[in-house]
Length: 89
Image (tube, rainbow, N blue to C red):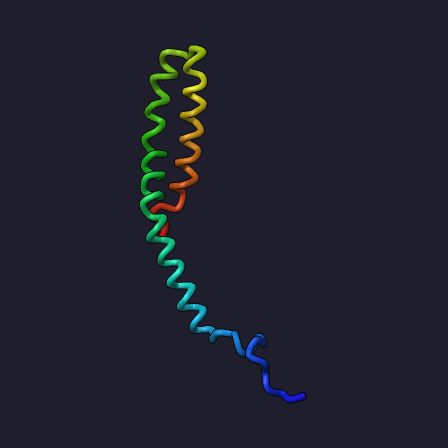
């Protein structure tokens, strides 16, 4: 058998390390560009949503408002998760 690598071997299909780092940097840059508007909206929603708690706490809860409060808390948690990395450089 010869020592020539086949075209499908690992050596033949492996990219140089600088190509991987360039590809990785490009993908990271694209992901930051795509996620930035969602992080912006999530962050500022997480800041603003607690203002809607105040009227609910001041007036007390009726049966209908309990479900609205649960939706508000769920939206707030989602906004916190989505906006967590905003402006973290």
